[in-house]
Length: 181
Image (cartoon, rainbow, N blue to C red; front, side, top):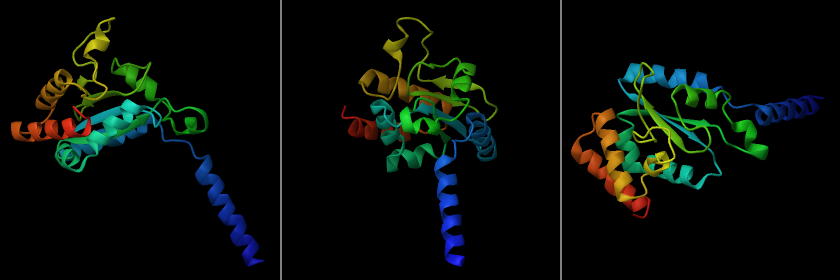
């Protein structure tokens, strides 16, 4: 009897684990902003998807050991899934598109990233200073995959963090190696 009860509870746990939906985006953002306020950091939020090659390239850059060590001193990293498809659609964080719209972001594709101060004010985003227009995508930084976009990314880090010039240059050199520039 105990064995049957054990199996039933085990199957219930598995079913619950696989049927859980992703946490709401606003809840995740509120938690990240609270942590940023406590730790005197900014929030680096990324709207992403697992199937997206530029998203995975950006993630590889941000999680590179040397880059992550420097960025973690300045930013709380937040991934918001908004474009998963098929069986993975349940992994989308409900409300991500509304948050992106709130910060005047790009809701038609991924990755879109933005940096907020601890009060939730947008400091920078992957539009790289461009206004919504047909030319906007010329300045759009999915990840810094060219010398020009890398320089723009460096300027964003300068404006939104207390990283030193030496640290920003180290990040740039790592990005060049990771992104094959």
